[in-house]
Image (tube, rainbow, N blue to C red; front, side):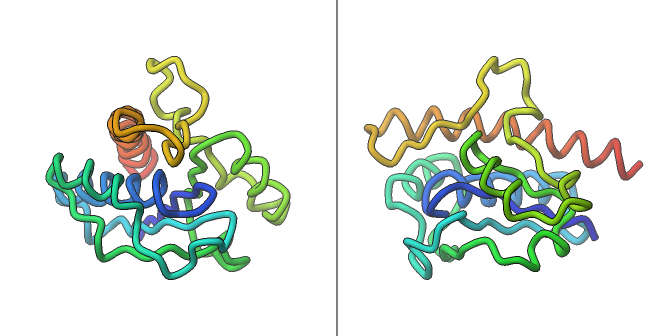
Length: 157
């Protein structure tokens, strides 16, 4: 079982979107029994809360349901439990690097590194933006998630 954790700051916008998108992709490829997906935040500000309503709405427009997800913070055991810990931006990747034991640093990735053709470094935080920001984030995440799945399939054979 390959385990993937998506991480943003509050775990209410970007990382739950990535969890939902990646779960759908694994289901479409018949890999849901071989790949486990979760999401978390580097903060605990929204612990127990569902994803932002704007994230949920954008996901619904694209056939993905996020309402059952709940925010949680990254836990120390996540670094051992997950094979891929995928940060949405530089700030969260830096935070994960500070918390992650040295030998496990190889499990840390930047989301957009799986879609270099996008030409963006970070998945922007849409929290304070308008509705179009959520659609743009979804597009970036979807393309990056496809790249991550291709990477995992290549690595796993």
